[in-house]
Length: 66
Image (cartoon, rainbow, N blue to C red; front, side, top):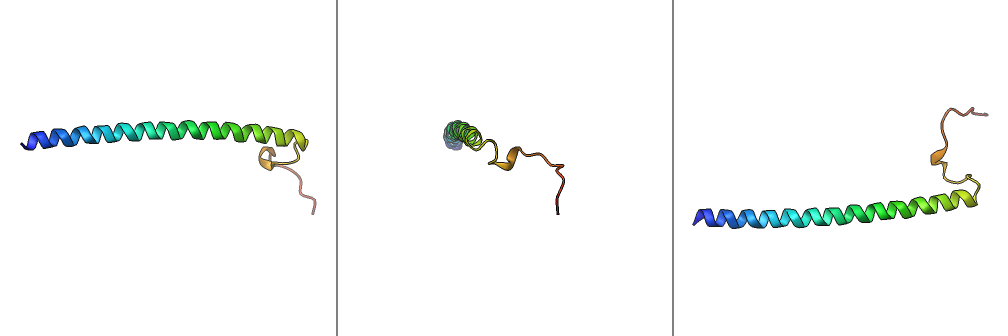
């Protein structure tokens, strides 16, 4: 009887892991789509502002005028 319970428990654990993998995959796909949309808006904003907005692309090494 214990082997049957162990087998059923194992089946449910496997099904749960499979469902979690599917949910994780869907989450990663949605994250990639949102990152793509954000990148497109970043490109549009940088074009409209002549690359003055979004200091992410600016590199260090500038001279400080104090």
